[in-house]
Length: 222
Image 1 (spheres, rainbow, N blue to C red):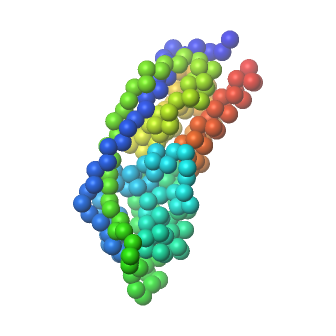
Image 2 (cartoon, one colour; image 1 turned 90 degrees about the vertical axis):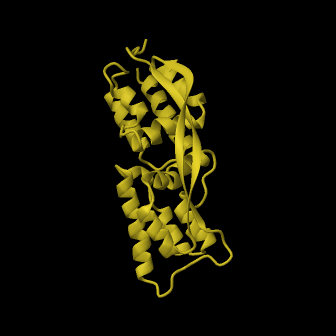
Image 3 (cartoon, rainbow, N blue to C red; image 1 turned 90 degrees about the horizontal axis):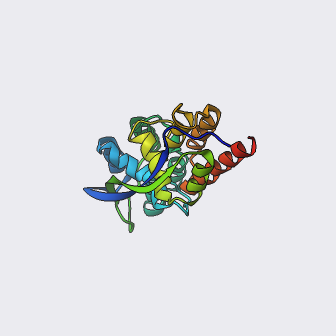
């Protein structure tokens, strides 16, 4: 029989309330200026929240900045450069903001004219407020965790991976923290593997699939 934790893992989902900030960009220079000025919650919304809004289907450009310059401004070169950013590899949102701003600034320094929308939509800056929704699901063993993760709604994965890491300061993410804790499952090797999954830039369903697979491997090894 597998280890039973002293403290259970409780799956908590979330819902997102969006706040339009009333600032928008019509060209890439203004986009850069606003990226440098807006609250970090807005940077978070346009990068990480993308994965909550597109949990099941990922587009070609996996963040709002890349999508806007590519589709609305029709600047595919900058779109591809911004699309290559992995928001999960940064330890904080200021570092992520700096990378985005640096890419846009370097791109603009090579141009004689500022790309802007002609017939497209302006970039509307938004930030979000996340409200947690307790699902009433407590699990005590690795098998229970595995089965719960396999069926829980995508919002719970977002809450325990993205929200935990970037806005609550639990950098390993909640899954890995529970695996690592002595009062949790006390499985440091599994925790280390799960931390790596959270930094692969996968969509939420990709994270679910990888972590479930790791749990299956750990269960089979017993």
